[in-house]
Image (cartoon, rainbow, N blue to C red; front, top):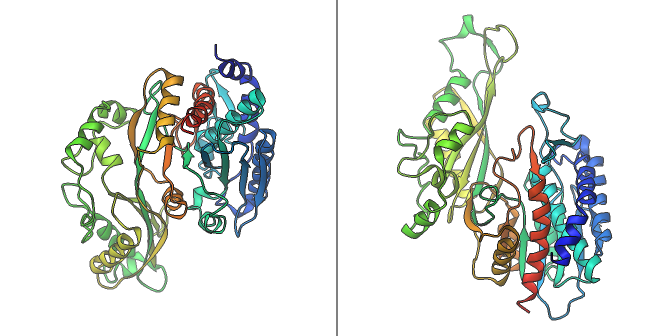
Length: 456
């Protein structure tokens, strides 16, 4: 056995304890009440980087701290920038968790269940432990390493772009390596080659100045809930196409080669739908399930509310109705243009007697990842070394907003090396991380640095 692999095998119990400690921290970035927990988590991450042999600092922001670490002891070697996040999604609804979300639980000795297990704490810590392993074995790293771990990814990274701009020269690197995605399947490593962008909006529809008795006023004034429902229902045609004017004008059509590459992955649509409790799917006609969920643009309602929603009956005609809507975008769509088109559509289709305010929330630019950079090849070789099979190339249906910013501000390509699995229940109750993925992920992270050093 290679000395590195033997070292990592001997350290598994210690690495697991460190992961459990990380997962106990309630670093929910969107909840102001959790700000002390987020700050404590940032300090813990900085201490782990120091323990791994890097020089680490905490950078305060207008929100949550950014952790920065570096080791620059390999003159002439490539420089890799590692990025991840230590903040997590809110754990609600709490009643759907098998155990408290911040009391990490080992299930069947094979996986850890906790909020943040795979998004992104487990994947971040895999890289930190890889750095520590190489430093303890050799007293140095094979390449120069810079590390940026933020605490606001789950709320759109509002303070990371200014940090990148301010420290542009200090952060110069040959590539950015990110593990915040998934493998294709157990035993099948993957490198993600695209990410969809995002335009997220909230609609507030107003009718009467206050809630009304539905018996006295029903049938005489416009109902905001019904009006909003009509708007949402008009957003798609019967073929599943989005009806916003100009929505598809900038969409790059999928080439025959791209569709063939996606088809070669052998995605089992029926099995995935069955795992969701569904007998059939839905969406844009003419495309496979995998194409629709990764490489085509979409529009979805994420929430809708208004009026009375408590137990029993209350005959009310509501004054207001609300909805949240997200659009997943593909190259070369622009979040601001899509948000503006959405606002125009709402105002055009809203029934008389109602008014609407459309508020744009955070967005993200779609990203295509370059495959011709040295770090991409290093990751390919490392993944094949660890799993024994070459990685497949996948497309991400979600967004990592900061990837486009890294490419724009620093002028470097990103390598998206997922270490989790697609059934890890990201953002859902009972989020998990398979221990095999964690331990193999540490190996893959270490071997990526080793392979990258061969490019010097």
